[in-house]
Image (cartoon, one colour):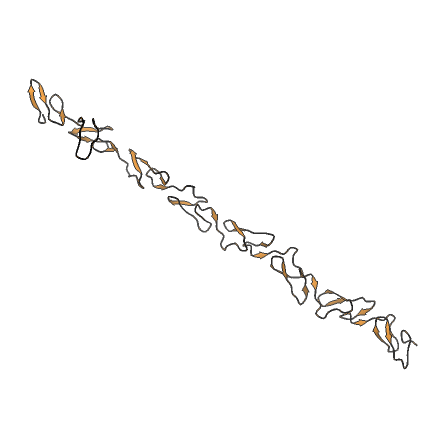
Length: 269
C-alpha cells in the first residue's frame, strides 16, 4: 500500500512516510527529519493527544496546534504580549499586566483611595477628591489659604495660632478683639477709632481730650476728680463750699471776688 514494494514473501519495503507490514501506517516520527522551515526534533511524534493521519501530518485536539501538536491554543488569545504557555493559560509580563488574558494593567505601588489602574503604572483618580501618582494626595476645592494643609478631601488643617475657618481664611487674635473690633490679620485688631483704640480695642476714645487729669472711661465720657473738677472734659474747677456773692471759682478751691464789694475765701465778706 501507499507506494510500498513487495521485496519478498510477505515483506514490503515502504516509501518514506509510511510503515507497517503493508505500509498502511503513516509515519509522523521521521528520524532526523529536517523540514524546509527548520529542524524540529530528531524523533518528533504527534504530541498532546494528536493523531498521525498522513505522513508528517498530525491531527491535533482543540487545545493544540503546530506540526506535531506542540503549540498550546489560548482562546481568547493572550493580549499585551502575554504568552500562551498551556491551553487557555496566558503567562504575562507581571510587572505590567495580569489577568487570565493579561488584560489587567498593574500599578506598583497600588492605586490608593479607590483610584483605578488604567494602564501599567498609571492611576486614574476621582479628581474631585484625590490626585497624585497613586491618588495619595487629597483635594480641597477651593484650596486652603494661608499655608493651611489639605489633609483629607475638602478638609483644611490650619495653624490655629494664626488662622481658622474651613479654608484657613479667618485670622486669629489672642486675646480676642474687644468692643466690636475686627481681627483683620493674625494678632491685629482693627478698631472703630472714633470710639476705641489700643491693641485689642480696649481703650475708649474721647474726641475732645479730658483735661486736668480726667480719665476717658468710655467713648466720649471723661471721669473727673470731682473734688476739684467737673464738666464734660473736666474743664470746670470746683470750689467747696461754693463761691458767694457772684464770686467766680477760677481754680479748684479758689474764688475770685468782685473786690470792690467782696473779699474773703468765698467772697463772703
